[in-house]
Image (cartoon, rainbow, N blue to C red; front, side, top):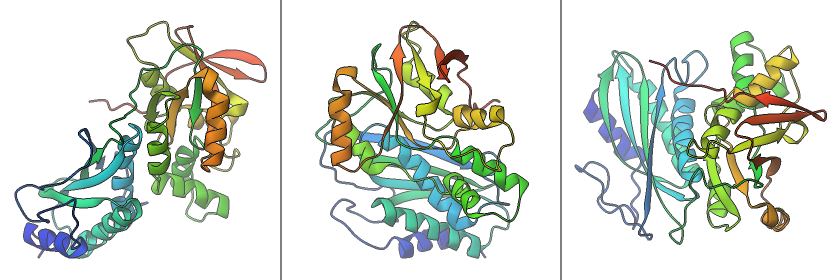
Length: 325
């Protein structure tokens, strides 16, 4: 029979290592953690069955890995270093020990991949599967990057291809046998990777003026990056400069393909702005440190989002995934 004692013991077994950063180990009322910085960075993220994932498409291992990855992406978007996490599990009635074992395999794999420690959590019965992750990081040299810090003229950059996750989900819903290119897109949706190294690099750069991770869609998160406190601030994106996959079988029209790129969400790439006068120097530093980044547009004073495609300018709507209740 599965109960909370089994899960606590499972966590102890899967995360049995001790470190100088996590002082008292799993099983106490709270975790005692040591950090080097005087500023900690804390975020939480929930993955809810049939909202963020479907058991038709995900294994328990994939759910565990993905849940930690997307939570850590928020730490990366601040330019900080992730250190610890807590996982609260809301489990449906009759959840099996085998399922929970595999879920923890995913947590363990992600923990080792990102070099972060599990320091606690909670468990409760629920009507559906919910994985709630709290992540804790620390600033490097007490520096961090916020949203809304850009100025007109700053260049807009992104860390990787956009629309792939949305295309991957679309393919999953339509087919059961996939070719190589389709599997790559599906992997982007099911197994996004938090940009830990790049986030720390950007966090230490004096050229970065603002940053966010793309969770809900490029245009929606770009609007968040620009901020509501500066109503005259806008941006123009260049379609040809946006990194994206070819229009493959996940979409059938250019319109739906563009929708995936601009508002599909789940890409977990970093979106950030760079001082215009420092862009050339920034590009050289990225090449020197083997970071691939892509300049996709510029901040302006239009108060709106626009797109330049084939030399023509059109309006863009800040569109993407929004929780509605």
